[in-house]
Image (cartoon, rainbow, N blue to C red; front, side):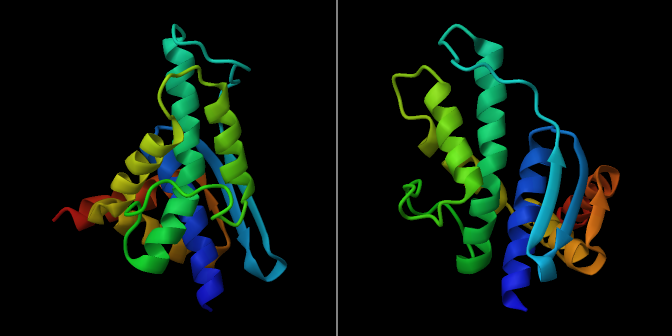
Amino acid sequence: DSQTQLHACKIAGHLMGAWLEGRRVSCVRFQPEKREVWLDIFESRLPRRVTIWDYRGRLETRSIIRVLLAGPAATERYSFGTCGDSPFPSRDDMDVEPCVWRAVDLAGRIESKVPVLAPLWREICAALNRDRVWAAVTVIAEMLIECGELSGSEVNEFARHAMSRASH
């Protein structure tokens, strides 16, 4: 059904976000009938506060935020055919998903004089709006619905294969 497809697309968005960020995915389990998802993406330990001088901490935190926002961005792309046309949605506009709250929390840790979330939202939306990337999201979503569980190596293989086919 369409809700299962939407949910699988959101999870596939997170997985592609992780893949694009070079994050290692261990496993994903998708059980829509039980309304359960288990997603295991390795992330390093993040500092409580990321100062302007902590270049590595800033890169790492921004990377995790993009992975977290990739799911809602994929949901938007699936629903409307594109994502990121509007500014970063406020917490009130979203279904207050845990991934959004976590992204907001992490963004609050980054010491910055400019907004952090809106540019990261635009970056991940731009990535998901690319035909090659979206082709990979849809293939991974289809495989999640069909198989229910994928290993990290399967996610990598599906992403690589779908992106190479879409570029030809």
